[in-house]
Image 1 (cartoon, helix red, strand yellow):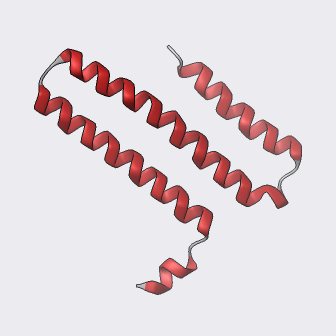
Image 2 (image 1 turned 180 degrees about the vertical axis):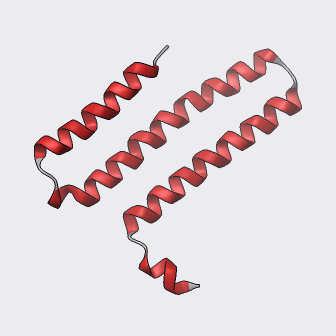
Length: 93
């Protein structure tokens, strides 16, 4: 059991933990929305998720790029962050 954990890179493990946190937050909010059964509270809870999602995306990409920084050129790093910025602009309502 410990062998596969020690084989994981630190950056990958952190990215996995961020995604697990994000998924658990989504499931928790879904349960709360179901429990409260109120459109007003559902909107408030969804607004909180609107902060968590992009934050996890940005952190995951930043950790991945940091881990690869020595093997990526500055142009490629700029393109990756530019792509993330375009995604965030594109989904902004």
